[in-house]
Length: 345
Length: 70
Image (cartoon, rainbow over all chains, first blue to last red):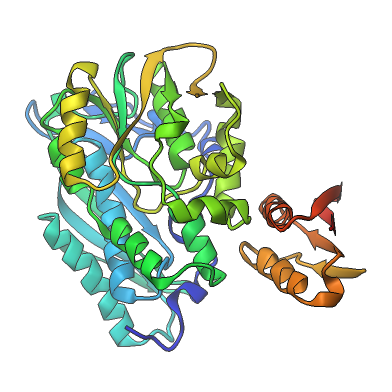
């Protein structure tokens, strides 16, 4: 639908590209006093997707929040993407989302219909995720923001941390890369509407379906690939797990349009922040095209799950994922800690 | 030689500015672009190289001056 002011024109950064750099956050939180609690299964220390707190022996609470400025001009699609992105962190922990709260900021000039369409998008995705939006908080501000704070549940023994991958695991990624590059190029009118529809649909797709398949197999760890890009999230997974992540550059799924657009310099600033953050942790075993490197550092909005699957289950898991999830690929392997955290071959 | 001041602009605006300048004939052979962040420096470099230009960069006080030649 048309709106008088293009939503994306109100946004200074797009989607997860608006995320503050990982290194910046770590420095800001240094030295703060925090309580310890034996029931806290996942806290801040491992840079994971969500916090997990055991309520009893069978149930743990999963909590997360995510929000960002408009990445698309259609308010209904924006609401869906923001909600799918926020819900994803619960799936990435192996959990099931159940309750959510809206987080919203709207310019006073924004018309009621647009606001309602954003919210309708959020409610639509929450419904699809069997999650109830029970309320929220909305403020006025210059730049629109929408997202959710989500609570879900997981069995305490089945939490999929980004720090519990094991040497030997196969790494499967469930959505193609290149979202940040393509949405940046779209701002410069360099991308066809048909391509954008494919990108929007991917971003609005819940990781629920990939997670449901994942839970049938012996998976040791998981994260979702969002603002810190494939490389930033792989770096966290490797460091957290005390292992090396080996990535197969010729197996990476990405939108083919992103390659030439990266060559032409339509790369979001967040990609350079991600490179700055992770590059010392990467050893390149062979020359990789700069454009492909850029895709590996490209911030993803509502990206796919990156799962560490036990090698014995990897083939079956990948087969079932491929039958149901377009773009799922086996992209690497977890290994004993070697010369660096990430090795790209 | 024309000078494009892309300071204060965020991606993809500096690349769009350079793209437009390249399309106008008088600026097509060589131009100077001034940017004030790493992303703009890298993106303008990538775009210029993709269009067949050579790029030389000097840095001073957090600003980058890119000389583009074809």
